[in-house]
Amino acid sequence: MHDHAGTHAEAGCHGHHGPEEALARAEAVCRARDLQFTRLRRDVLEVVASQARPLGAYDIAERLSGPGKRVAAVSVYRALDFLTENGLVHRIASRNAFVSCGHAHTDGAGLVFLICRNCGSIDETTSPEIEDQLGRTLAKAGFKPSSRILEVEGECGACLGKPVES
Amino acid sequence: MHDHAGTHAEAGCHGHHGPEEALARAEAVCRARDLQFTRLRRDVLEVVASQARPLGAYDIAERLSGPGKRVAAVSVYRALDFLTENGLVHRIASRNAFVSCGHAHTDGAGLVFLICRNCGSIDETTSPEIEDQLGRTLAKAGFKPSSRILEVEGECGACLGKPVES
DNA sequence: TTCGACGATGTTACAGTGTATCAGCGCGCA
DNA sequence: TGCGCGCTGATACACTGTAACATCGTCGAA
Image 1: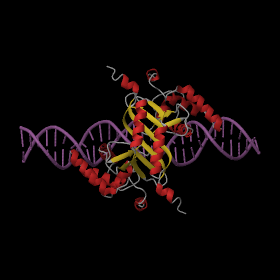
Image 2 (image 1 turned 30 degrees about the vertical axis):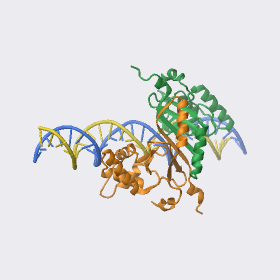
Image 3 (image 1 turned 90 degrees about the vertical axis):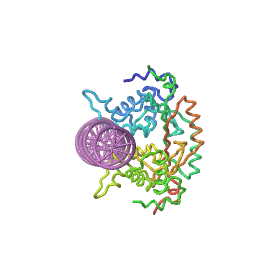
Image 4 (image 1 turned 135 degrees about the vertical axis):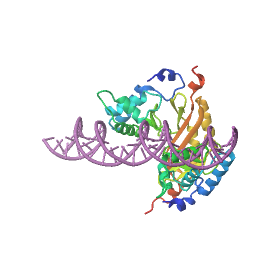
């Protein structure tokens, strides 16, 4: 289930900070903006933050459901909308899935997602240089940006280090 | 339906070259690689290339279907797979839709998609500088890339020029 | 020519993703 | 107490994508 938590921990991980930090940050953000950090939103964030891999909305719903309790996907979507709007979770467009945001960052500034096609983990970095270049390129094209996504698929450092489990 | 064809034509358009060019290039590519440029593939490409906006697979299927003829979405998907594998159309991950590729380019080198949230048109540019910076950033992170997507949403030059139709 | 291999297409079914709509619930506030 | 408002539950549905199998056409070999 959460077997990668250990293997991933060492591997140049900027992105995955664990649930505690994400929850603390969420509480702070919601308090600052006078928003409700409800039980459902908390639970969804906790599930997403507990994984270094992106989770689909239905995955999350399944994990939140149990014998006595059933969480519908639509509720998860609403919680995810809330969380993404407030920068607590990111949507990975190339996977139709979601990851928790490791650190506060100024609204999408040069954010890059590194998706390992081997272990499925997601790492998150920023690059002001890319942001600069992108800004210049857009200006040259006469385009006024409002949001951007930059996702790279490949092999992460950890998987390159230990290529095969033979 | 195709009302934007005129309005878009003047607007710093790198991306939308019309169906003829796309079809000619596709024929050349398929001949060079000894691939079959079948009727269905041709039709799908023609529909996609006739629009500056990205089209969903079901949109394409609908446009290809008529009173006597019905094209199933699954056939469209197969044609789109073929076309994307050969660099003739691109998938826009943030929209789950497809656009025809305006020009030959060396396998995803610094490709940037500019999606206008006002008129819905897509423009396509490349930036070696961004590619450079991205390469450096990835190297620093110890990440070996195999593919990447970079999509920017905002307002295109044409829509900025004529802000409102009042 | 006939046969078989192979790739493309047709068809059905189904899984996964996301939204619309309405009803009910909890809580603050007049 | 009652009202408003935001959150949640629940159902239904639309959109996106894939799996599996049948069929067809073409090309090359026997």
